[in-house]
Length: 92
Ligand SMILES: [Zn+2]
Ligand SMILES: [Zn+2]
Image (cartoon, rainbow, N blue to C red; front, side, top):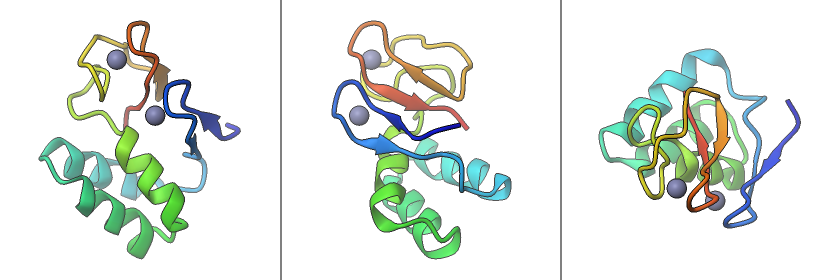
């Protein structure tokens, strides 16, 4: 999957190079309220460039199936743009 640009903040998010084993762990960090932990995990352990680690962590779903920004239902696609606020959500 090519990198995707968030229609709301224009940040480029690349999900391709993150190993499967880190995806659930990063999602769990964000779902428990720690975006910082997700950045650290994706950068220091999964080897993502810091910019992409931050972009990913900021766009991860805080609750499964809901827009990370406004909470609207967005379905189950890995990458989905919100129909209300346009923000991109990464669902892992
Ligand atoms: Zn965004
Ligand atoms: Zn939204």
